[in-house]
Image (tube, rainbow, N blue to C red; front, side, top):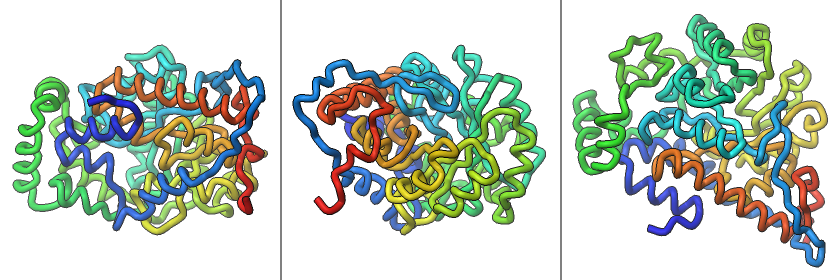
Length: 383
């Protein structure tokens, strides 16, 4: 098939992956209303087309969290992403580095910090969950520092697991252990390309960091049980500050949707926030990320870095987020679709596609630099 936009990579990923993996990437919580809203509300943002501006020297480079980068985005943390291609997070990190953008590794990725860091020259960023096992968290912080990570993303919007019904139906988390195992084996057999690349030669098939707590032989079912035991709804801002005290680099609070929470993060001197609803995978019926972004950016954007994730499927979406107040965006599903469709090259192609879309859009908007993208590019709401 011809891969023209990110949604074509989504379809290519669907055709290549076993259902349980594709639905894990693609699905959301409850009725998936917020998942859809993230995309639709972002695409509803209207920008001012300008003419005769002479904008023919477009530059996409900027500085984000102390790094000079080629695009105002990073590859955000996605759990189990490494199972979508052979040692997938390693491939994605290499593609990100080649494109001049950061890569953030999830705590629950298939590949470990050490494996990913060995495949690139620039250490990845790292994402950490607040969980009951504080010893595990301290171990992860030490490992991240040991490989040279300078930025920690603390995800705070998972005090309890969101109900993801696609995962139950697909055999990832629903049914008896035997039913799940049989379902996953049959699905893999129906996708021989993935079965050969990942199933046979892409091991170990573990959640890399969690394996240190569960043992090398632990599988996906063991991971789900461990996560269920370790979700911690009792966490507070004081807990986040205790983690901050252990981390000498930049620390970002990921999962903020409310202005008061953003102000609290700024008051407590965190370096930034990610305006995010976890890709619509936690609380359904809440604000789309783009709808939460503007008020938050106006409240704290002069005091800290404001990033956004959720619904970004094109270079135009990146510019919409910047115009609404973001300093940059985290790509999630978009890069994993590319990884599943074509490994490292697929991620590279998605990033090149987004860059090309941004250049065209900036020319049409009459701007040449990222620092010129702001609220004045938005069509007034009364228009």
